[in-house]
Length: 352
Image 1 (cartoon, one colour):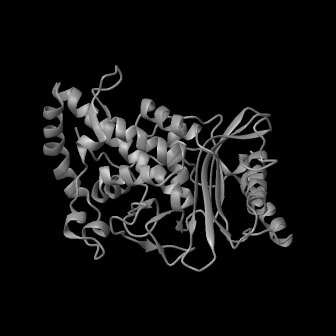
Image 2: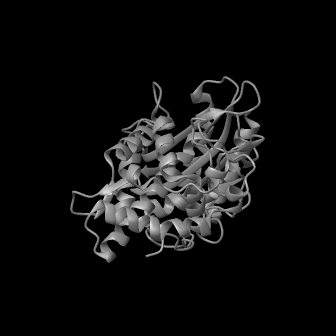
């Protein structure tokens, strides 16, 4: 049983959907001419799910999708999925080896997985001058994250503390649960898993999470477009690929995908906030699953917003993945900031 199994096949089509792309670009131009905030610097991608479930050619349209941006709490998705992958791998190891007690399982995890983590630790982590020697070789705290299961689905499952951490960071959108999860995994496994699965290129592009949201551990930062550098960054393209696999129940496995989507279904979304909301819960477009992000940029007085979503068009019974980021606020009301984003996404969805 290997912990690192290589890259997922990217579920997105090799080129953008012509009608969706044309609608996205025309709407962006109209918004720019109207003076809408962030119309020019927004990074956004919309992926069509309906009719292509489980395929590797999902239609999509995007703007600035390959730019690396600081995305703040949006990257908690990466910590969640890496933890679920660890559970799945540990469960398979225990089942295949016929292990029935936690001491046996933990010993096997350390024996089998720790050398793999050493071999797959990215140079950005192992060679980081910002990290201590201990940070560079940390291994998962298996007993903090995992335990012998008492249910029917798994031999190994999450501890009560780890489940509470997922609830805190994904549903309640708080930082302490993310800190607990990241500390339970360690940067070597977390960054190594993301890179080995194909969501980071190893240098500066893709899903990158090497900060603990608490400044208790030193961070490892990479260059990004919207800030000097970031320890919590991504491209819209790579995060959309990850979320499309999740939507199709292909991220980690069907049961894990369903569990992760269960957390994201109970989280709040930017477009359903406010009175009235941009997207009413009884309206045409509904964000059924999501994770928001927001945080300060290093430039004084600036905050950046982002979001990853699964969206349902209730009129046409269609579903989409959407990721947007680099919406920069200098104090404007949220509705003023988010309405142009909704308009862009609606244009792409309507064109599918």
